Image (tube, rainbow over all chains, first blue to last red; front, side):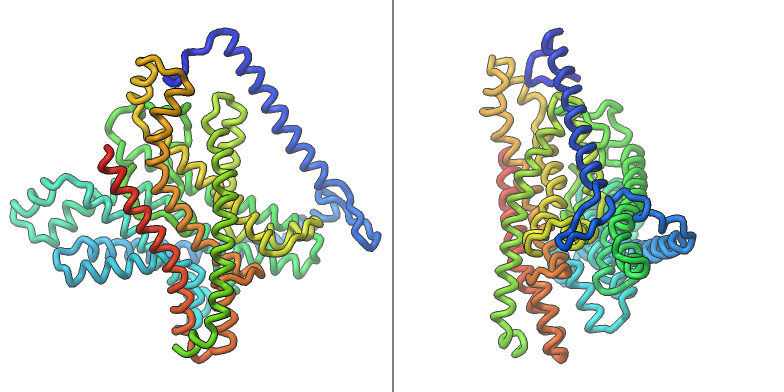
Length: 306
Length: 215
């Protein structure tokens, strides 16, 4: 689709745009190459000692040690263990919150709304510290429960938005055929809302996975702590940058694959699934990644479908 | 309760630094985010690709890792301003793709018919952006943008773990002194955070209501 904002480019304009594009690629690649070379150059520190460049083999030989990979694997498992348990709990808490928030009785609805507002306005890190100090649970359960409550609140808001966006006839029909209000909510409204909000929920789970790294700060030995603290402490600080890059790569692999799942689910069962195959036209050029807005770490939950 | 009142100067000092972090990295992220968004929607494919890769990588990196890079690796690479500046850099970089996404989705939220109408009454590219698209896009962008800033407020707490003395750091220090009043102290810290986040949330809700009337 050509943009409606300007006339379709002619041959001259197209050639110019292609030329700029090629220059752009070269520019970006040149900057990247310069960065990589600059980082690889040996450095002389203030006292005259020469440090080898960051790509020097002496900074990377540690990765031939199987024990290093085993430790990193242990870190990944610890991260996934925290994220997995917290995700299950967050889903349960989210469902409870959404029911409380849409309850018929004011006595349930108002306190739930206050608690939700409170939890969503709070840094996760503060919640982790609070649970750690007040309930002295140990760092694992402090992280799990804080992540579960915080993300549960956001998932709850998403589910509530999903329930409220349903046509009112759905609830009326359920009540009309003699289901109790609770049964209507469980068997008619909730499944539809959950379906519709699944992409947002999965995006939130990516945020949860990212936020497990906060447990690093309270001393839980997950991927980040193992990778950039324990291992460099053991093998020496000159490996710090190498370990950092490897940990970054592992995080990116985990998060990007989960994001990819979210995008896949969004195509199959998002709010727009089953409607037009052609997405709505937009003002700017089409973007293959546009279908799911990744959640913002510790943030922006509770919006309805766009 | 007296533990909070006694240590109020420490809290206020932390609150000031949190606001400073929020303000500086908010402005930085806004500038960087506008640049990334502009690259992201530019007609030149290579710029678009670069901005997309940047967005995806930064958005999928944990904030703790970004701040770790700023606090430990930048000094190691012989770039060592004070930790406050390093934290501002980290928060700016981390927040910028979210700002860019909010901007882009706002511009995309303007119906195509608006642009078509503008073009068909003979406005040029610049005029249709200036008089038709932008006034609508800006309004649609503000609520998600405020959400990004609310999240940024909460994210400044992570900087407290990397040697910046802000609210979270202040809370930790006071807790170390007064282990007997942990609940009151952390509730005090939470109160200060809620001052910022709830105010911003109210503004977002009000703006959203105004935009809804518009449509």
